[in-house]
Image 1 (cartoon, rainbow, N blue to C red):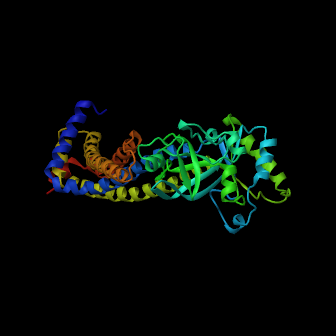
Image 2: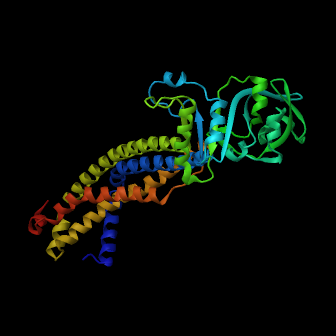
Length: 408
């Protein structure tokens, strides 16, 4: 059994041997260093992206589904989706009347408009036409003022709510409440400023306007297709709600039993699964690239250890002649191989962390390195050291002491 004192002795001997051939030892670690650095760099980057993407997707709402003309992820022929019938008030009325598992249903329309106040003008502002339940489904509430009411929708009032950033740009230091802005030249009374939402995927969620859907359709035309946001307060009922929605929609749109759906029920999980598939592929590429580098590094360690065994043949012979057992010689050279690979692994971990952090900082994402990535990087380098060093160590342990002493 290898005792702690013997282990530290072999570790010290291995370190002395590495210092004796500094340049050779450094060059030997390069393959391990590059492999581990590649794995840690991309792993750290993906973990930062994962944290960001999943936090953004969570804002969509896990208990909300979206009834639309086309799916968010299109596979196959795009034209078969493009030629589908629009989602209309007919579907909205049917869902609102018949869906037992639906707690909120909101019809929505969208457009890009110019928004102005006095001399301030901003193009390409997202305008949403919605109902009084849109705040509950989208989890967007006014910080000041009030939200749209049922009366606003029924009477087609020219009122609006605006995002926090847009309010600051348009009104500067003025209080926007009860001021009138223009959307494409039409005047609207500001009744509320929404809570700050931040950005999602690089786009501000605080530069948009919400108006009653009835007003939107009256001013900008009612021929646009709708998106229906449907929410259940019980997440366990989500699948039941989707089945119920599918039945109602197929009936109201007169889809025959033999035909596929001519509508889409979209939800957060679709985007989460797509992203997971993409990152799984990327992880596979990481390990292939890193594995090749580690293989090259392992071959380098094996070659150097074979050279080291040859150079120290007489030393091995002396040790065996004075009683060193085979397992101790084997342990000494294994420790030396693991030390070389671990040294490269540690440098690779450090460089990989800084490289990954630099990439994430350029993308304005939070940085950090997890214990998982550290264990994987260090585990890979140690395993390569053991595998690459075993043959040279075994060869050294099998040397005949008499032949070793005669070696020149």
